Amino acid sequence: MIVKKVLKLSAFVLALIMLAQAASAPAAAFESMSMTREEWDTYYGSLRDENTLPTLCTGADETQLNITWHTDRETAQAKVQVAKNALMNNAVTFTGEIKDAENENQVVCRVVVTGIEENSTYYYRLFTGEGYGETYKYESKGFKNHKALVVGDIQIGGQQDNSEEQSRVGYNWLCVLDEALSKNPDISYLVSPGDNTSTGRMANEWQTLLMPPQLRSLPIALAIGNHDKKGFAYNYYTFMPNEYYGKYFEGLDRDFWFCYGDVLYLFFDATSGSAYDHFGMAREAVESNPDAKWRVAVMHQALYGAGFSPYDPETMILLNGVFQPIFDMFDVDLVLTGHSHAQGRSHFIRGGAVVGLAESGGTFNNPRGAVYINSNAVCNQAKPAPLAPWLAYSFKESDVTAYSTLEFTEGSLTVKTMRGDNSELLDSITINKTKDFNDSYKFSVKRLLYYIVEMLGLLYMKIDAVVVRIRGGHF
Ligand SMILES: [Fe+2]
Figure 1 (cartoon, helix red, strand yellow):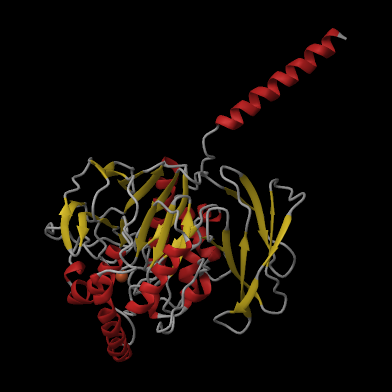
Figure 2 (spheres, rainbow, N blue to C red):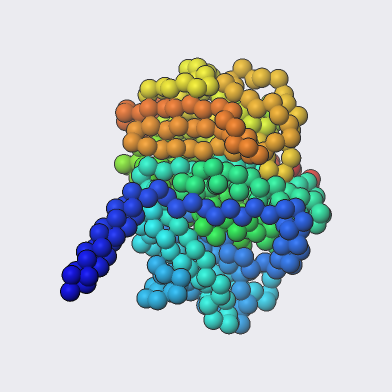
């Protein structure tokens, strides 16, 4: 009898300890997916000719996930099962929509999973025609206080459609993810400022991009870059929330937005000059999320970035003319860009000028202006350019992919940039914020002048469409 009581008490105490540990446990770590180059080549070779790996995208907010995948047209059903146990007991089934794929034999399934809770473990599986397929584990991380990962120009395929080059870039992509996620196991999602693929039209580029197993548990938010715009594949392999097709956008053009915790992300398709539509997306996003504390813009081209490309007349005059006023009118805090393949960070910029210094290691309270982070690339790095006057930091190594993290806590944002091979800290700043947004987009001189930009943007779009047709795609 006494033994039984002791056993019962021990079990009770053990349960209490386990509960306490669970309550105080840090976010579950990403499992290390390290492979040697030889192991990767075998893995890559076994998967490259398929196109059915799912894309796990960020949802409209932190409680949602968007999932898309290709499957046979004949047997397709847009269904995802989600459970809190690997045996899929008591699984909840989410259904979505089926869209045409880029080929006749397949369709694209798109499903939104809702009800995700923070720091929780889920298992999910997709309907693949012959029943439900492989079960994947998804571990959500923090919501309000959270960390995002930023990696630029993944550009699977490098500069060409070449299987060996694709494998090399794919392996670099795997290694950067492995390094970033093993050193930052609390990362909630990944932001890519575009050029996710090289030719923009090859299914195997997307298949390679999706190969790192970490991506089954890491939602991604992918801006469109000029390389993605060379074809239409982006359309079939992504499912971003709140896709905004605007009034004058053409073809693949689109913006999108989503919220995560206190952060509102505005993703702009910078290959489109439709100022009218970009402004419209920003207004819709801002007015739908009046309580967001932070506004982060993401676009591909390197406004106030490092390297040579920010000096392109097209970037300096046209893109700056379209986007800078939007960032100012909507009081954007942070702008994430890529394209130049050179890592750098700006001082505080407003109205096209430096309005405050943001030296590395500093903490800044309620600064005026936005900071621009320009990511280098997974595929290859540009040669270092002279330090531009707007830059506070520039990474001089020309053969290492870097990654950045955005850490959001109550009223503060810390941006860190690390080497992608050993996570050595290269640059960091912290911004504390208590002030409200001005929202001068509602009425201001800048807003009135922007009507002219909107008209010029439409004219530019017409000219650009002819130029793109002549040169056979975007640069
Ligand atoms: Fe680019």
